Amino acid sequence: MLTNCKINNFKINAQIGSGAFGLVFHTFDTITHREYAIKAVMKKSQQSNNSDNVDPSIKKSTILETQLYHFFKTYQDTLYLPSVDLDSISNLTDKQLESIPHYREIALHLKVHYHSNIVTIHQVLESPIATFIVMDYYPIDLFTSIVDCKHFTEDGLLIKKVFLQLCSALNYCHERGIYHCDIKPENILLDMFDNIYLCDFGLATTSPYLAPNTCVGSSYYMAPERVLCKDYDNESKFPTTTGDIWSLGIILINLTCVRNPWLKAHQVEDNTFRHFVEDSTVLQKLLPISNDLYFLLSRILRMNPFERINLNDLMKEVEDIISFTLEGSLANVPRISNNNITDKMINPLSLKALLNNYNDELSEEDSNDQYTRSSIRSFSSSPEDTPYHSGADDSIPSSQSKSLYLQPNLSSTTAYSTGGWLPAY
Ligand SMILES: Nc1ncnc2c1ncn2[C@@H]1O[C@H](COP(=O)(O)OP(=O)(O)OP(=O)(O)O)[C@@H](O)[C@H]1O
Image (tube, rainbow, N blue to C red; front, side):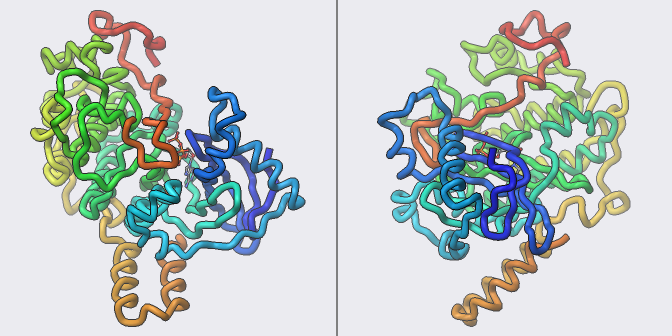
């Protein structure tokens, strides 16, 4: 609908995503001819302006799409929008973010976007209707790559590479006190060299602990303590880090088995999950996994979040594991060693991160030298994304996931399945 509309020098080519509050567009820079993704995030003021006279079943992103259409038409399809200084967004305090909640996603993302496996934000453009986030564009997400392209079914080293890059990105976030809370294949993008880029910080938080039943994330990937469950008393607090680590366990199953183990980590509503809690070896009946992978998964998917493996140990285990499945191409996988590691494989302190440190040093030396700082920023990101919800509206607890297409093998799950699975993929 907005194809060929322009925002400054970015020409919209197609809409490539729509979530709870945002729309994502594929765009071209008419000056440099580079591709960018632009995410339009609806402003809180726009949401409340419309809440009285709009059918609540209509998705906010649909409302945003209509508003943007009229907005573009008013200005003959071309908007000239001011950019907001990225450092000032990154430095916004929690108190300041309360009055502009849709900036929280951007502020948290900006604190970690220097990592080489996290999508880089280039500009933030402001309009009365929405805020536009200009990011690097990547042509495919991990969901499509696993399910549609079957890209990982034959290559254990490739699985290790993308999984270790994901762990590295997440570790970088956790070390900086940013907890993603929506780790799923749709939020992980891939470039043509199979490097991954984490995106969508819409549910991210800086809270190191969350109350139980804080239903944040996508159901397939959500840790049991985050799913509504009466077993936990409301006085308990659970580490946010290990909730993200649970999601990594599910992604490791997606990568190696092209399946999800259960719909939801809820013992009452999901029979498969209840059987797993009663006897974790059920995983070996559900999935074609090797003993090695079973032992690793049982250290990740611990019911007690305090007992889950930490990220450093997890990375080490994945480097060393020598088989993912019982048979087939993933039954024998190489250890990661100095011989088969490439500098693109796990690259936490990349040029981007190094330049960020340099950027910080410059900031201390001469905070007024904006020209130098912005030059470094553009170079660093050039050539070569409930109760508790930190995004734009507290009433939306979780995000959508396409993962029904990743499902257990029906023949081996009949005894455990809650029903409702689609036929085996
Ligand atoms: N930088 C990017 N390059 C290419 N595609 C992107 C990029 N950022 C996002 N997308 C695509 O757009 C989709 C939606 O983006 P994003 O998850 O940020 O929006 P959202 O509104 O938070 O969605 P949801 O509510 O489903 O989580 C992604 O799943 C991805 O397919």
